Image (cartoon, rainbow, N blue to C red; front, top):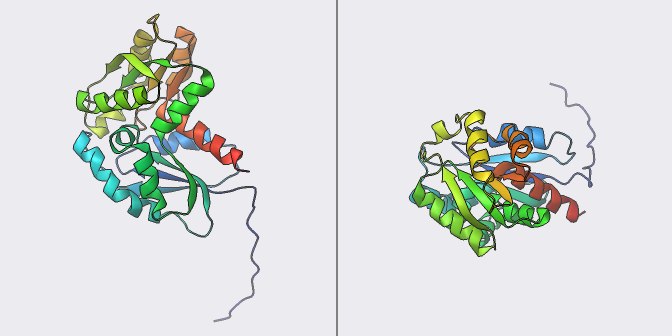
Length: 237
């Protein structure tokens, strides 16, 4: 065997890595992030966290315990500016501050965000605070979610749900169903935007269709999280 010489390329200091913690059951966020980050030069590294096949407050709360181990699996060669935790409903149950604390136990990162924190920032950036909520969740999950947004000054008095607890079905809800449900909610005169909740709900193709029909901003978990991660990453440069 010949041991051959090699050189090392320096890291691109302008392309600071970002991290993403994805639910084991999530089939949507990575394909949608591939599109949303297609032109971003910062590498995006992904780790998975165990998650149950059904979504309820107990299974969501369990992820608090598992967050440090999931964050620990992200590459450690370079520190991160921002890491995103890809679960809207769990963030409302665990709390954004606690999510950040658990991730930082094992990951060298400046900022930790999640869809709840990101959508709040995105709504503020868009100048909207009265949102119609469309979610796939059962009611025990919707209640803490709406309460968490209300605590951030965002009202969701108009809301609707597909009432589905099984993740494998959530990811297969058709774009047509999402569009029609969101338009029905978004046409209410008391709301100034629509929020499509859940990183596993396919929303990227639905957003422009809904906006064209209701003439109001439409936010989603994945779109908001990607926007916030990019914004936080750039703000630290």
